[in-house]
Length: 254
Image (tube, rainbow, N blue to C red; front, side, top):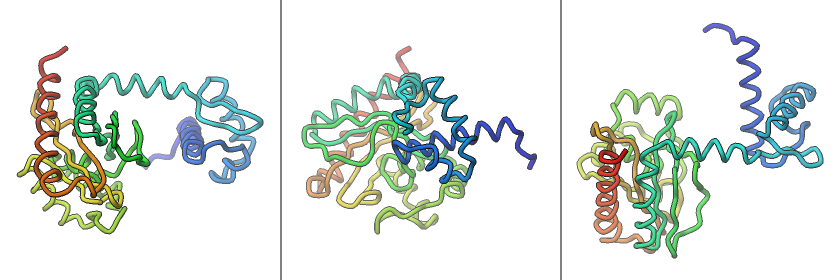
């Protein structure tokens, strides 16, 4: 491997600083320097540049992520046709069922929620628009993994692992591949308390004009409500129908 140039190292430190502030919230120079094991003077220089360019805001020496990132996020999201066509369908699912709907895609081996419309009875979760997940822990993610080449799935496993989130999380690669085959046979993916205890989710794949799966549309709710036929029949039929509408929009609109 070639050694990193100074400019690449500088960029990586900037990104590490941004990620640290995102994870920690309002934080000062000394804490960031200690977390990243860099001199305070170096960290302060990066912070000042980021603040001057409106990527960070500061108050009494404490730094937070600036809203300029929201602008970038909206541009990135609106550039995706699956979001533009999928959001109305997800909103209708949420309104019809009262539960939490979502559109998700894969990026760099993780799942990303593009939108999460909430129905009247939707549970409050730790996730949000833009939230990144391990694909193997959710119906939304497994519905994407199921249609990727095996070599790509193995690369994702090698990169991100199969971390356990609950006692139901699939952490064995062979078990996961068997599970993904079942998803392809059914055309829907299920998450039975695999990322969060007490939460179930159903997802259907969304294809583009080349029949490539580019994301999923899903419904999630508490196990107390997603039982029996609702979980195994009603909601799967709803998400598959919604996915079909989204696919038609993707193919036939500009």
